[in-house]
Amino acid sequence: MQKIDLRSDTVTHPTPEMRAAMAQAEVGDDGYGEDPSIRCLEERAADLLGKESALFIPTGTFGNQLALFTHCDRGDEVILEDNCHIVANEMGAAGVVSGVQLRTIASENGLMSPAEICSRIRRVGGLHSPRTGLICLENVHSLGEVLPLEYMEEVYALAGRYGIPVHLDGARLFNAALALKTEPQEIACFADTVMFCLSKGLCAPVGSLLAGSASFIESARRKRQIMGGGMRQAGVLAAPGLIALERMRDRLNEDHENARLLESLLSEISQVYLKRHNIPANIVFFRVPEDVVPAAILVRELHKRGIIINPPQNSWYRLVTHYGISADNIRCVASGIAELIAKYNQQIMEE
Ligand SMILES: Cc1ncc(COP(=O)(O)O)c(C=O)c1O
Image (cartoon, rainbow, N blue to C red; front, side, top):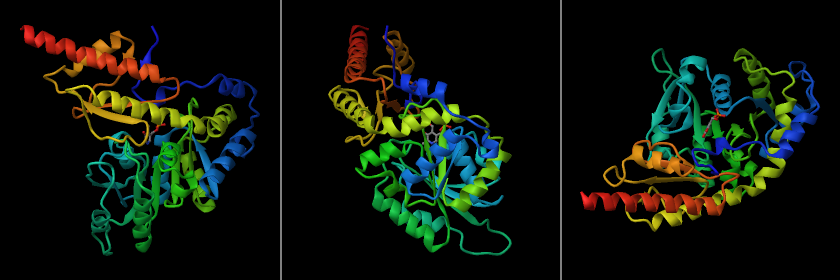
């Protein structure tokens, strides 16, 4: 049975072209700056984002934490959205690695209100208040939302007025660029530093990049070493990353179309509730009330049909479309959910 795995776009496998590139990659010791494949990837990434420099790092989490570590001093405060990856999914690393304090702002959709950001910025010096060291944005946000350019511009200008840098978690930066019908540098220009991942929708097996000014990246390179992230002949990982950048960006629209197809099919099923309509990227949230089909049963029964999804969080299921998932697969998922709901409605009526 073919598996339809919608847990995340992180489940994508490297393409045959990537595997061939790994086998043939030119490598050297990156500790001496001698790996040509890594240098090439870093230059291309910086160029694509309109930044002076970029650094190859093992994961997105590593990149975000390295950004915090490089921008901030211990005891600084970082302003960020309550549901973002750094807060919700990085194991509290900000306290462990950088010793910073996270000052979160709750939101419905990932967009912190600029007025609330402003109210969190600490302006008074003295011996008691921490210093606001950084503001973080996330685009595409984990809640599936795409932050509009005007919003990013407003936050960046606000931060600039107080001399506070902005870091962008752009794990899915190219999905955001596609959704906004713009180029990645048009988003990246509203942040001092940007992390993006090669290993999600772009299908590379490993790797992320952190981009920023030449002096920031020079300092991040030293901090990367402190975090144990200095790699040697990692050109074997950079080579598929280059293919991810050059060849896989252009097909992300298929994933967005499939997410919209899923949205439209789910919206036709009664007792399925979508968190939002007009899905902008590749992440779809929906809810099936527990008294319609209990989550444990829905997940297990779909699994029996080869459809793999995560259990809901706060009662929302989160499905992510990606390379290898076709429109037919999406139809199969929607019909599987519809059949299970019909079956359980029938059972309840018979009881
Ligand atoms: C928005 C966001 N940021 C950061 C990350 C971390 O990436 P990694 O899994 O490579 O650490 C993820 C991973 O899914 C993510 O969704």
